Image (cartoon, rainbow, N blue to C red; front, side):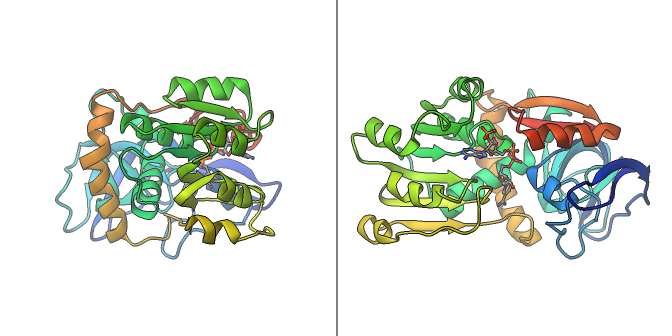
Length: 325
Ligand SMILES: NC(=O)c1ccc[n+]([C@@H]2O[C@H](COP(=O)([O-])OP(=O)(O)OC[C@H]3O[C@@H](n4cnc5c(N)ncnc54)[C@H](OP(=O)(O)O)[C@@H]3O)[C@@H](O)[C@H]2O)c1
């Protein structure tokens, strides 16, 4: 089969179309004929040699696909050959065929095309488990989603809006803020022009935000504590502005805050299956009802993976970038 290979892993990596062995499904695996593969920012880190795949995962890039079930490993009972599905993968998505564990496979929701469905798994697994499992978001609470125009952000805004939360978000241009508002954000803050702490404090009468989903880190660690409400929960899924910060922890004590952080990729198949079950129950019906939509920025042929990476590196996109084999 054809797959993307990483030449010269490091800051000047090159992505090229190459031959690779077609994977074979082991027990519990689903072999997928890929219709589309999703880009995730972690792919850029992996290509630079900074984010190795977990043990046992394919070294090929790609953490989500949509496609058709080609073959089943022993013990798989939740899908059949020929089914149209989308799936979270530990790796191997930038290819014509990919393996998913059966517990990470979801049907294509009603009203969504097979290719669009590729934009769903990684963002919804991540958003659900961080907002609901980690931060324990409750009905009626306010949320602040940093990076609202990202793949993750566009899913988080829609999920929270569909569930009736007041949604604040940050983004770096007016065009991105407008897109976030169109997705349901109550207030989109251009972080290059406004201080999000001041905006959320003013908009909540000084109370602050109940749950903050952050992918920025750096100086946002302190500023999130300032923006949080009493009993607030702050959950980090990334630290793009830096893993280290000098922090005054007094607000943690005074406001009884929780500071959380999680990654998805290295979790067990069982943990991912539990998230998949929650998505099927709580999120897929909202997608089927048209209340949450996949947000596609641009679709590239697989051989142009390098161009897709360049667009993500520039942060020129709003929503998801996909590759078509
Ligand atoms: N922990 C996990 O399990 C997990 C899972 C999936 C993703 N992630 C992480 O989540 C992040 C989003 O992933 P993605 O694939 O959706 O990537 P993406 O679409 O490339 O999003 C990155 C976003 O970060 C925003 N950003 C950068 N600096 C910012 C700042 N100072 N303030 C506000 N926003 C800022 C960018 O917005 P501007 O262009 O407006 O600056 C951009 O929207 C990545 O860092 C990824 O590694 C973590």
